[in-house]
Amino acid sequence: QEKFGGLRDGYYIHGQCAIIMFDVTARLTYKNVPTWHRDLCRVCENIPIVLCGNKVDVKNRQVKAKQVTFHRKKNLQYYEISAKSNYNFEKPFLYLARKLAGHEAELAAAAAQPLPDDDDDVFD
Image (cartoon, rainbow, N blue to C red; front, side):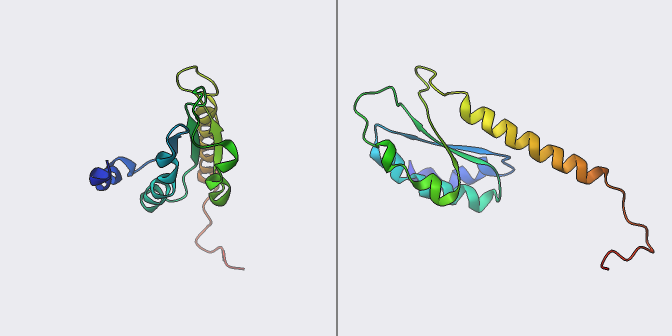
């Protein structure tokens, strides 16, 4: 997988938001989260990112909830989900949709502001 890591950057370009997902039954996937986050942020600055722990329906959990701390360090939203059982599956998408809709509203409001006249001193 890592030998193709450089190819990922092409998929990140122009990204508006992201979901970083790891498998709670495979500790190595959680250990890769900081690398995935760094690579993503290198290409896409200041986009909303959600961290998801998947497969919470499986009994042999390797990454316990209290061990998941990366999102706190990076101020990311975190959800535990199960793609198989649909548990919380919609939460990361709704969160990102709200973030993107709010951002679009800010951009629209800024675009609607009148431009200053040439003789206005905008640095008073």
